[in-house]
Image 1 (cartoon, rainbow, N blue to C red):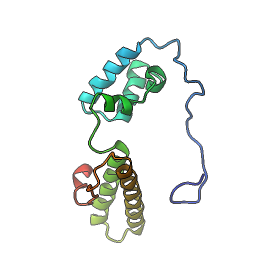
Image 2 (image 1 turned 90 degrees about the vertical axis):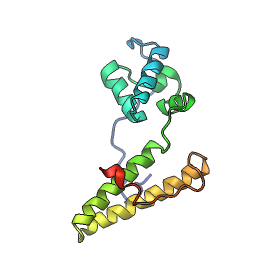
Image 3 (image 1 turned 30 degrees about the vertical axis):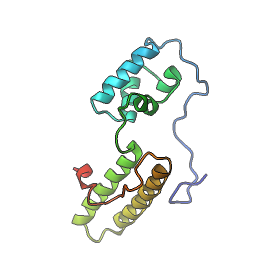
Image 4 (image 1 turned 45 degrees about the vertical axis):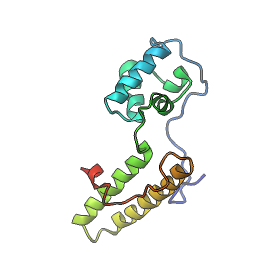
Length: 151
């Protein structure tokens, strides 16, 4: 499958292990990992940051293989999920950073294209999240509101 805004077809990158079994060398029990994830979520870490912290600091290779559910699903069960999904939030932050750059560099046409592409992705994602009822139907993306994310 091709990339979204180019004809490139690269597939390089790290891959998950083929087996879903819990590794024998993990010291933590599923209940302990769940408590750690909830604690990190209360410290306002994003789901991906929680996964990275658990991997790097606690030696948990995969939360999903240990608990049988992802960090996002766990946070949803515990009612700790963020109002905006993490991927949408990061795209909005990226668009805000590009807009900030464009305010200083008016003739940077590459950055203008970057804004157009990121806005297209944001609109596509909001359409999806409204369809699956993750965002309210009246929610609307306003570039002026996402300026706070860039700071």
